[in-house]
Image 1: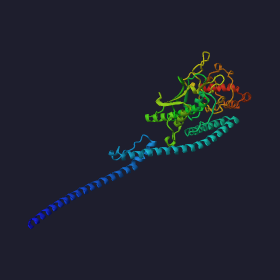
Image 2 (image 1 turned 135 degrees about the horizontal axis):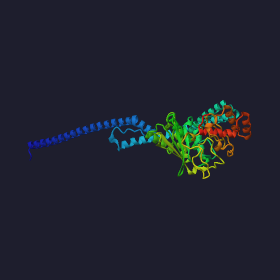
Image 3 (image 1 turned 90 degrees about the vertical axis):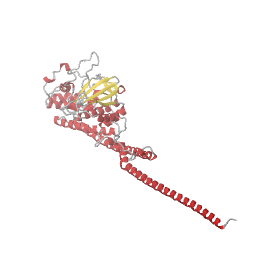
Image 4 (image 1 turned 45 degrees about the vertical axis):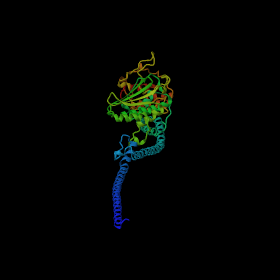
Length: 476
């Protein structure tokens, strides 16, 4: 039998062991709880840091990256700032933020295009009304020119007509940039007439010197006449604006392998590489044209050229430097836009520079050599939808409109027998008025009546004398 003291000692030992085991378990549990509390505290600190970093990243996105991304749509050269934490690049958070920027840029570009299209539609309507009013004014001035033959009044009317022509050019360019048609339909015309027609639309046309090296009769198909005139006018306008007023702008018309090139050289300051690249992008017409890309106020000349080159399959290059230190602009007209007119049946305008080429072995040598002052007429004449086959008389170097009629080959006063310009006296105002009135009447009877009344030679002889004065560069 086990004695009581032994039982008590065993129970005490078992109790001690149980207490020790329970105490060890409690100690382990406390340690585990302490570690868990430490881990929870670390996780909470990490979460708070991540939340602060995410908040800062979103604030950076809204304050810096989103505006920069929106501006980059209109100005591709601007840089968009990166994320605050470079470690987020490539992570799901970084990818999500980049997708936000891409979606924003796409929507901004879409809305910008939509708003610009609405603005262009409104401007098309406004320019259409302006063009109609200017054409009505042009017709009214034409009727006044035909009604009155007073020299001073005629000079004033021609000046007003020239100002009206410049306003028409600006309205036409704005309409073309906004997607409208060129607004004029013409017959086939000599290419040199289209060039001088574009020249006549400018305020500083006297500084433009045209050298014609084309084959006689080189012409444009009907739908290319007005686009070529507009492009030449805008290229000349840029050249005149960006060169000194005492310098000339030289225009050369040359045959090339695939057609004809019209080269415009100025003696201005030229362009930087960035300006030249931007100008080349505009005249190429490959990218969509937005009004907001053209500055304030918008400069529409190059944009209009880009529209026309894309629509009519023309080519313009402004990436070269001029040998005079400025910019060289080259308009290329391919062979499918060219035609031929018989110079005997439909001669070019009297003010057009004569070609340096001969049409054949029997062709007479040109009276004046090109490359000198005599080669360039003093004043180009207007080319309007009704002036393809007519003629006009000058008045103090102002652009003129030519009336539509069939002109016979001049035989009354051959150039070979005409006295030189320097030996002929300048016409009196009465003679100029008589010649102007006779030519505007457009009939042989009116010319026959006007000449005896004023005591001058016949109208045809007066016109030939006037033309020789223009070519010789004599002062009127």
